[in-house]
Image 1 (cartoon, one colour):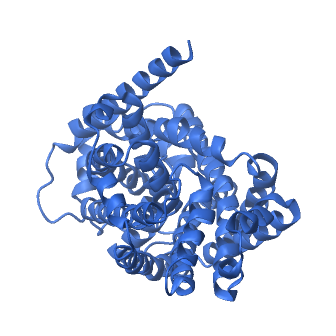
Image 2: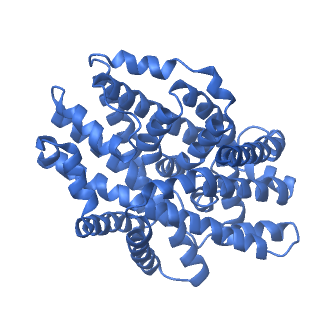
Length: 441
């Protein structure tokens, strides 16, 4: 552990973890899921999942990282060894988590490339003065040469941040950008509140259809969104935990991460959906909600150009901090496993991510996101929970959590992790799969 870089303070860990959590999952995917899930009908299970499953899962993943002093490439193998078992299964699971983080990163890179282009377009005014937002977006998203140019730019921006290290790169970046994201989104949310007919959006968000709450798919979407948004996939939080000092309070840090993520999600949805309602736009638009619908809204309001600039700068900050967290997983694994320098680990990771993005993601982004949020991410989060709460001896878990915590640690966290987190994820996932089979017959 002493040979590894580390966060300089508790808030360094909090902002880095929150940076990984707060991203397109909050600003783009969450409003889309809210629209798909019936407004308040989705918000309720999402907040429940955040406060119950999300909190305990963040605590668990950061704990296993700090306990083992390693990222997922070694952490789960070491967890088995703590129980006097061979680490082969843990090693295999850890590399699956690394692969899932890489898959999510290559999907993220494509959308991040669009964000960069729109952020630049909002600065120059080209995105604002364009008569047809769909045509402007189409020109960016359909031309392979343009796509690859901005993909390379996006990967380079992330790589420059990561190569500087944890304290000087990741921590400094997130410490500035996370407060900036929340402030920028809040400014826009207040502006949107004064739009005509915005009240219809608030009604949609605050009036639940209670029948939907008995739909297992809504809960699985909410659970998947929770894990997607909080970067709970047995990787980023584990890596950041491995960089945490023993004096840092994991439980308090996890609470702050969940609170910051919840605030960002709710501000984003109370910004985007009322704005969409105010101008009679369609909510169920996937990527175009962010890149066509919102630009059209900004064009129709006073001070729209500056509003567009603020919006896309917030999205840029959120996207960058999340992408950095995903790529850091692979960088740490290459350093740990193959003893590469940070420069070469970042170089190889960046090249692989850009190439894989071009091969597998361009033109297929929705399928990639659905695969991640509905299947891969929840299953990796479940596996991570099983390793910590079922495999690692209880006294070691409690001892690790006590380190840095000022009060006596309650033993409630073990049954919460074992039965509430792991049990509920299994139940909801099985019900969703059963319902999917029934619906396809």
